[in-house]
Length: 206
Ligand SMILES: [Zn+2]
Image 1: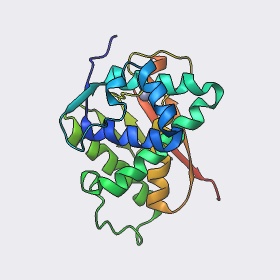
Image 2: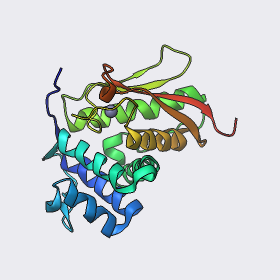
Image 3: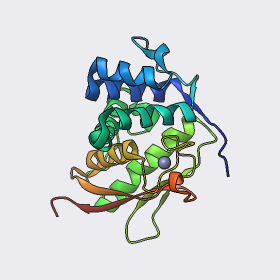
Image 4: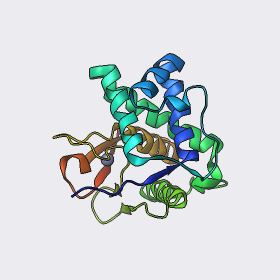
């Protein structure tokens, strides 16, 4: 079933490009912008606003280009880009994330995890009302789910491929809890699952 192509707003593309440049350097980023047909962003990042920027399928192509560029190291690089994206969002887009002034210290860890994942859902929905994302709190482990994931749009794979998302969620959970947790993508649209699902596992120092 082909998915509708969604719009990604400037603020999110800017966040991803700044994060990718931080991790890959300017030359690395420029190379993948060229191979993914996004050369218009070379030295010319979009502004931090909510106007439409690119299609989800183009965003997915950029992710695929980064993975191809680094070969076996691709997933690791994409996780680092995701981590840097969340760091950028905390630094520059705290209002969008709805985390300004959040006091989490007194909450149990599971509440903190739910808070930050719900904040990410809220930010995504603010950027595009058609985004379908939610937090599943019903199981033993909290999970973040999106059925409109842009990272794997139009891509197929026998394994989950949304590595950038794993990096962002991992950093979000670290921000909220002060500890690294194992994040696992259990379902992925690219392998014909109904959504991409990311489960927050054990703390790594547990
Ligand atoms: Zn995905």
